[in-house]
Amino acid sequence: QVQLVESGGGSVQAGGSLRLSCVASGYSYGRWCMSWFRQAPGKEREGVATTYTGSGSTYYADSVKGRFTASQDNAKNTLYLQMNSLKSEDTAIYYCAAVRNWSGGSCVLFRDKYNYWGQGTQVTVSS
Image 1 (tube, rainbow, N blue to C red):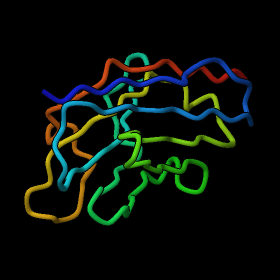
Image 2 (cartoon, helix red, strand yellow):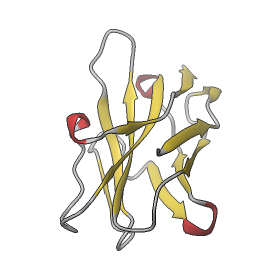
Image 3 (cartoon, one colour):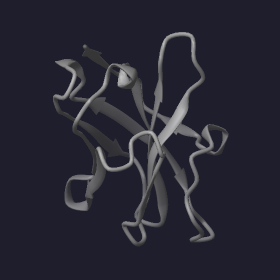
């Protein structure tokens, strides 16, 4: 059973930075889509960034492009999300998610495609 555990959330002022971590356990070696989603109060859960572990290629939502960077450390089974130039609208609970990529095709940020989720970590950005 795949387990995902996020950490690194907190409170920061606008313009600041945070780095989120997601430690994965119980998953076998292979091709996966490892992604970050977020959910602000009263809003739908939205995709932030997705990484195909087979190549390391990453796709970002337009709202975070140029400010957020996703990376992975395969030796530590850990996914990271470096968030810079944070804005108040980035305030949300951030979730790590995973799905097996059997075909090796592009990863997408459709939440319904993901069957493994972490518990989330709160990020609060004050202006």
